[in-house]
Image (cartoon, rainbow, N blue to C red; front, side, top):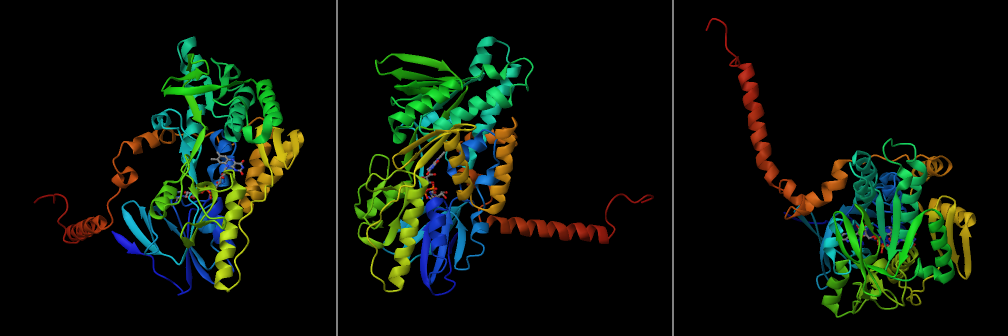
Length: 483
Ligand SMILES: Cc1cc2nc3c(=O)[nH]c(=O)nc-3n(C[C@H](O)[C@H](O)[C@H](O)COP(=O)(O)OP(=O)(O)OC[C@H]3O[C@@H](n4cnc5c(N)ncnc54)[C@H](O)[C@@H]3O)c2cc1C
């Protein structure tokens, strides 16, 4: 079934692809512009990815870091939100095609902002994903939560020391900010939160390993902060293993290879992949139509004003782009999207173009565990409690929605001042749902009736209801005594 998005006002149509940092901030920046904004994204929420690791380790609920985009934009009268996975961008006809559960929608545009972000990269070993989920979506975080807490549960039931060790070994692959935060939090979970909860096993025996092929932790933070982070993690019981590349992953463990070529097997049921990113395939899709360059991570080269080669009406922002070695961080996406929105507004007002896009680096930070973080602001390097307070303030400011800030603060108090975690629920579906869906040819679309099929079912149900009523009214039900 296909459907064309109707124009509601006759104003300049801006389509925004993605509801992440680029998409949401781009749409919001057009609030006062004389345009009609249509945001198309494959999830119904805006995801605050920097706190995914806290959902995975039971600190925050998924709702706190993923407010519904529709609610966030409810008061912005010139914006509407459509659920859909964008499968085609026709640059000639200026039409975006999106799909959801077999329903196809065509949305025409006058200007387009593409902010489809990046996914996990397994460096050509996509089969690793089965046993080592990434950390890119709410589904990923909930699956990991189930796997992490589930591993402790299974260890309590295990028969042999060997099995207990395998279940209580957690390997995080990738020593960037996500890997560091994940490893720090799993260690804290074992050392503080769960220490009194089990009878047969000692949760504090859990082994947390942080692995990376590079020789440094947190390379973008520089050697000094990288070393400080490594020491801090080790103090908390995390084994940091650098210069080791993962060459195989299976259900029960993984194999790593040292620079010397020597291989080692690590028995570990729970693996977390936080190693690489691959830009949305929409980058390649746009490159194929325009001849724009694409780098190894699938990021598309754009003009200095963030427009697509030969298409000034199309802007590409955020994690999808390769421009001036810009990092894949939230502020690049936010500032880029605001720049694109301003340019669209300027054009409509007949104003001169802006200067080329320039990213203003506000700094980077990563938490190691409670009360401990590292931050790099300009040339200033900060570690420990002060950095952690900065982390707390920045994340509170950028979390979308007042109610999310209040509840997140409450959950942080539970975790950081107390020893508890408010969100320890994990279900079987969270752990196995992804793999079950992947076995279906068309994913979730195989589980629902195709649009239109429901009409036949409705007719059947209506006829059945009429017949039921007739049987009752005509007294034809049951066996009459004496008949
Ligand atoms: C675990 C993790 C931790 C991070 N921590 C930090 C941090 O501490 N600080 C920091 O600055 N940055 C951090 N980042 C990076 C930061 O989140 C990204 O740089 C930022 O989200 C990029 O914004 P974006 O808009 O380009 O993409 P995203 O925010 O990823 O948004 C992409 C959007 O596009 C949608 N989409 C994708 N494909 C399609 C399609 N085909 N059709 C429709 N919709 C589509 C997605 O559903 C999503 O809504 C982290 C990232 C991760 C994964």
